[in-house]
Image 1 (tube, rainbow, N blue to C red):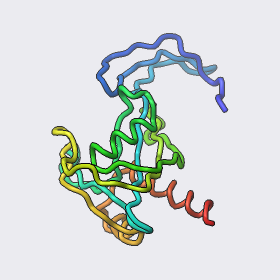
Image 2: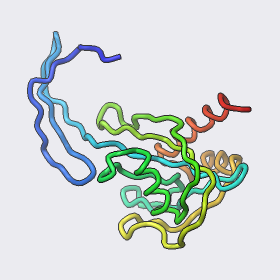
Image 3: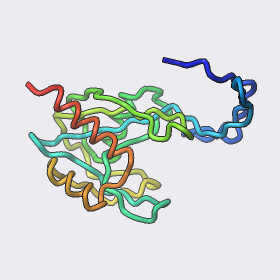
Image 4: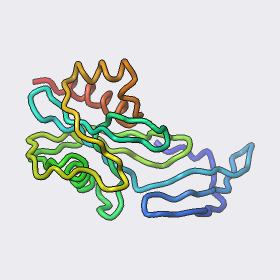
Length: 183
């Protein structure tokens, strides 16, 4: 439900690249007017690849801004595809070398609702087939793959080795999905 609480008087794009734009809205409400700075993108797609009955495929990626390794589910910006499911399939093969025979949308979320318009759509990928070993693009700094089960994911979260907010949110969505879709 959209609440008509504020009115945008003017919107300015301050910077734009292939992934997102930095914007400023001049807005007003009944009691206040001002500037609101934020980022906006077409969104991104995160894939939870299941490679066996209870096995998950994750990537080990060096995150420059934090200067440390992160264990994550594959994820990427919606750019040329303009479609979450096509982006999910593209990111899966780029970041892991696998393709999927079965993909399903299981949810979505806004990671930074107060500062960035960026819906992350979460997919579950099954029936994985290895296509190649060349993973990641040069600028992604993917260091390898990690095959884990659900208990190992919980332990990696507990000890801080899985710390990416997107992966944590997607894992919560996955656990809720499984709980509500048991046969």
